[in-house]
Image 1 (spheres, helix red, strand yellow):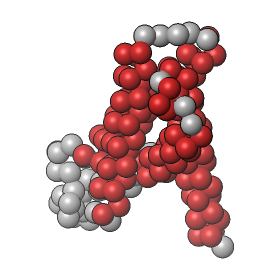
Image 2 (cartoon, helix red, strand yellow):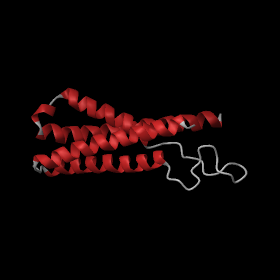
Image 3 (cartoon, rainbow, N blue to C red):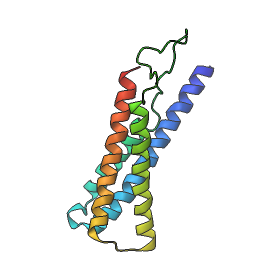
Image 4 (cartoon, rainbow, N blue to C red):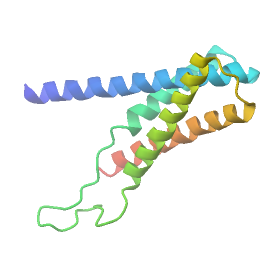
Length: 144
C-alpha cells in the first residue's frame, strides 16, 4: 500500500511540474507572440506549452547519479569526482527557462515594450533552457 501511495505522489508531482512548464511556455509564448507577428497564433502557444510541459516533466526531477557503491567504490557510471552532466544541464536549463518565463510575465504585467532584440533573447533562452532540460532527462533515464 505504501508503495502505491509513494508512486501516486510522484506521478502527481510530475504532472504538477509539467503544468508549471506549460504555464511558463504560455507566458513566454504570449510575450514573444505579442512582439513578433509571425508568432501570433494559437498553434505557436500550444507548441510553447507542450515544449514547456515536456521540458519541465523530464528535466526537473532527474534521478541522481550514485556517488559510491556498497563497498565505498565508485558505482558503475558513478561520478568519482566528475560533474554529473544530467544534473548540471537540468539545473542550468531550469534556471534559464524559469528566468525567461519570469521576465515574460514581468513584461506582460508591466505592459512594457522592450526592443525586439530582448524578445529574441527571451525566445532563445526558452528554447535553450528546454533543450537542456530534455537532454538532462534523457541522459538521467538512460543510465538507470
